[in-house]
Image 1 (cartoon, rainbow, N blue to C red):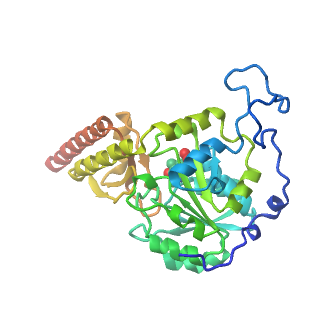
Image 2: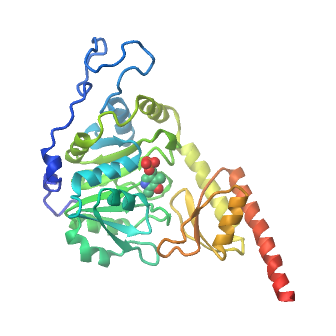
Image 3: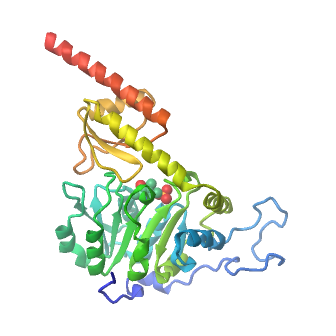
Length: 360
Ligand SMILES: *Cc1c(COP(=O)(O)O)cnc(C)c1O
């Protein structure tokens, strides 16, 4: 599937960014490791970390590219995908003039990043199945600079219909961002295969979820080389520390993502099964991710009862179409058993109170 629209990404970039002469870091050019480095005011005595890291993270990107079948020129790395979202907005969205479109409920950082950058945000509610509302989206697509879609979506857990996303992509002349933070847990294929077909497409993935590396803050952006070039121009020079580059590289080379993924998916099935048997549970939304959106009869009571038991879940009840919903991350078998045990305990207590009410 190809883009129908003729693209020149540079027409979408903010003027000040287009004109920007980026900071030239001392380590921009790959130099021979045997060189004498007197250019960056570093301390010459080795500590393991006395040198600045590679600003373009070439070794790490090469390994990511190899594993995902993507050219290094199409990869950007950020201090978490959160940094990439912020940089994309700063590169393309003129404060107080451009607009970003999101589909709610979704990941909260999009709204926060737009607000920090003083960029207008339009929200369209997902339909009753938590799918994209194509008609409403098309109604406002013409004056949108950037659209961000999260699939599988947080907090609803579902993936959006691929056909819908492609239809929008083919008719949108702004920057289209797909956040695939949970893609590894999904049966659906990543949009990485479409990257070369759409010069305005940016795909975000992360080390934080299936890779079990949230602590190192490494997010990946995949896009046309022109977009990557723009992001490289505006990022802070050493945005991924040497420690984090090394940790990410080691994880890629040594850890098997499928093992923990399979374990989590198995636990998800167990959890769904157990939750379904509870009278407190009204609905478990279908999930393509490592969490469940669960509607409870008495979600507030559930939330505080779990809290007292030191089990922390996420209250999403204020989100559109999520009233009475808590978002529960799939934990270890042990953690999930504790959760279920606590819910059963609460259910018994609730039932007793109910009987008391009837008797009195
Ligand atoms: C968890 C999550 C991320 C990950 O962000 P990082 O900054 O890479 O840790 C990104 N997008 C969504 C929707 C998420 O839920």
